[in-house]
Length: 125
Image (cartoon, rainbow, N blue to C red):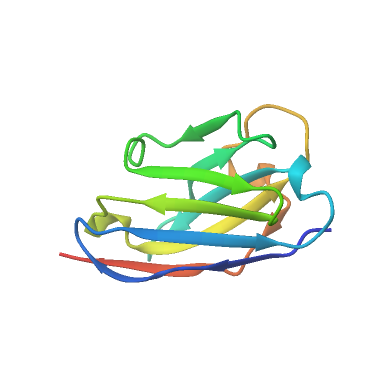
């Protein structure tokens, strides 16, 4: 069982930066794929980024590639999402998710079994 708690959201102007953190409970954190998703008002939850257990595999949705960076610190049971050059269309609730080890790179919500409560990111123009 994994429990996830996100933090770091807030209000930022376009072009600014934020770093989201997701603290995970459990002794097997290092074995999980960790992902970030987001959900804007009236839209479905969408994949943002994922990272493999040893930080060797990362994958991003096209709209954030080059602007966002996912990383993890297994010693701290924490995954991060550094967001630069933020745009108003990045406004959403951002969710952290964990997926049991094994299988292909997970980019769909159904591939993740554990979710945090979300943190709001608002980018003003």
